[in-house]
Image (cartoon, rainbow, N blue to C red; front, side):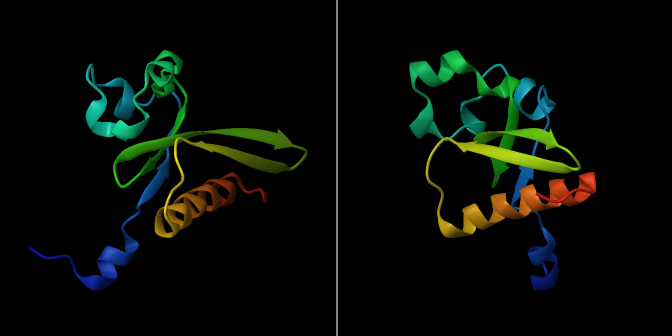
Length: 106
């Protein structure tokens, strides 16, 4: 069954996941959800599944953190690699959704 074009546009390509989320914690072998380019020994030592994860097209592409400054929420992202324009836009939309959800502005 093919997706209707209007429905396909509504599918979120990127998510900001909370720390300790089952998406990263629920697997012993996490190689399927990480970009294999970044699976260095240094990267594994940091074990980013314990951080808040940035998911793009089903892959953990980075981490994020939130800081509250007065009435504003600031979201900092740490991507594991440079993303193409479409993926960068998807991450930006995820950040904007989160900031809007908090009722704040960045």
